[in-house]
Image (cartoon, rainbow, N blue to C red; front, side, top):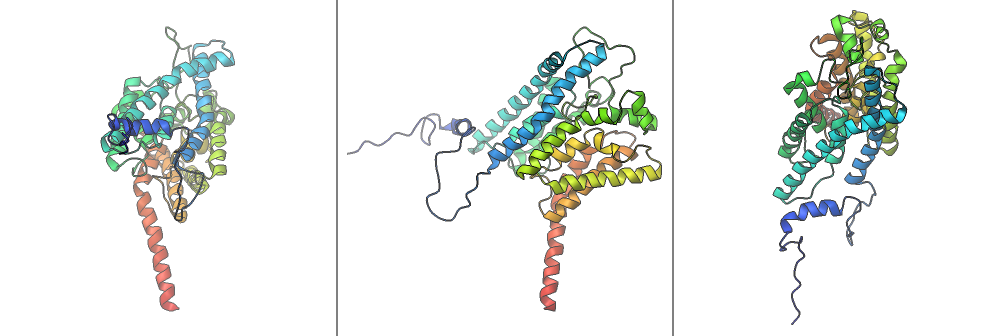
Amino acid sequence: MAEEKKPGLFEKGGKLYWLHSSIDAFDTFLRVPGTVTTKGAHIRDAVDLKRVMIIVVIALIPAALFGMYNTGFQAALATGASWGFWKMFWYGLLKVLPLFIVSYAVGLGIEFADAQIKGEEVNEGYLVTGFLIPLIVPVDVPLWMLALAVAFAVIFGKCVFGGTGMNIWNPALLARAFLFFSYPSKMSGSEVWVHLPKGQAAVDGFTGATPLAVTDAAGRHTVDALNASGWDWWSLFNGLVPGSVGETSVIAILIGAAILIWTGVASWKIMFASVAGGLLVGWLGQLAGATALPCWYQLILGGFAFGTVFMATDPVTSAQTEKGKWIYGFLVGALAVTVRLWNPGYAEGMMLAILLMNTFAPLIDHCVVSVATSRRAGKKKTA
């Protein structure tokens, strides 16, 4: 009589089966499972969730690397130090790296625990969220605050809705919103965007305020206000200004946008529509006297470019229909600039605009589908 084969440690019936989800996640992180379909009709495509997430992370790398260099550049500028390129980059790397460690340690820890409790596979969705969060916060944010924000975003932004693909709002933006409303002093002002070396003070005249805060101060929406702080359009475009870690360099963001569009991972329609919405409202703001800045300045100030490319295009929380993408993207850009120009209590508007449109994305798709269905029904009746 053949001896019955005992299940493996992590297989069903094994002693450590309760760790199956975690072991499976590590086992399939860098390779696909060793099983293939043998019968039936199936779509065979190399693009799966893991590859999509990795492509987004690759697209984010230029912004992350520049953010590390800019952290060191701003520290050297603030203290009047004469640092070379590598010293600036190394200084920024050592300061930004803990943000990534906390983001992934807390976020993945919760994701693994949630998968174990539910007996499900660990999803790769947090690979991108964990990379995004450190890039959209000030470099000087306390790590314990970041840990709380990540926990809030993962638990209340993903897990309670059923995990990746079921969430209503962008989890990374939820983490930023949690920090902004819970600890506003650590998310605004002029002292949180530049990390000074221990024991050193800033030179006279250095404030650390972001360009968007400078233009918003006392209603000075003028190019002269930016030039007085030493920033021309090229400084805003290349990103050597104070701001969130990964949001300052439009050049680095455009490199990421090219990767996402070329690979088909993100919708160019949402990006284009968001830019159009921002330009239109910026132009209307000029006509109304709300700002003296040329409308295209809105695209290179604050987190507009980063939000348009990496946040608004989130395939889970954005509109899914083709026409809906145009409407959704346009409203994101238009609302962001509207908040900037007509809300005196909040200089930036991209976070609120995207979260609001995340809420209405399903309604936009519903309206688009309903209109299309009604038109088809009308054509059938007249035929």
